[in-house]
Image 1: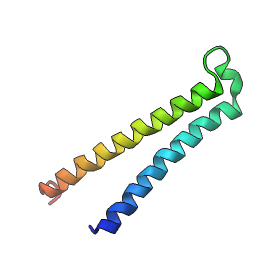
Image 2 (image 1 turned 135 degrees about the vertical axis):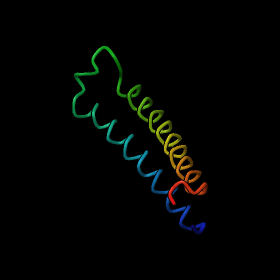
Image 3 (image 1 turned 45 degrees about the vertical axis):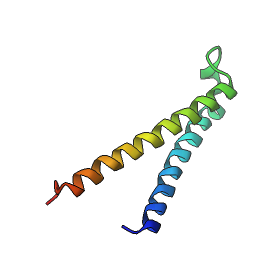
Length: 76
């Protein structure tokens, strides 16, 4: 895998995490009543961003797990 391929994959993983955050933030816009007394829009958006950051880290760990398995010959 070339460096440009790795950069492209990293970019795609960033897009997945960003898409997740955007989708979760949209929940507040579409159904604000479910947040009454629990969360403000600001709080929800902050939580969504934090969750997306965690998702991105988890995606890195999953990719690394399969890279190691691949390098160790587990798919041959």
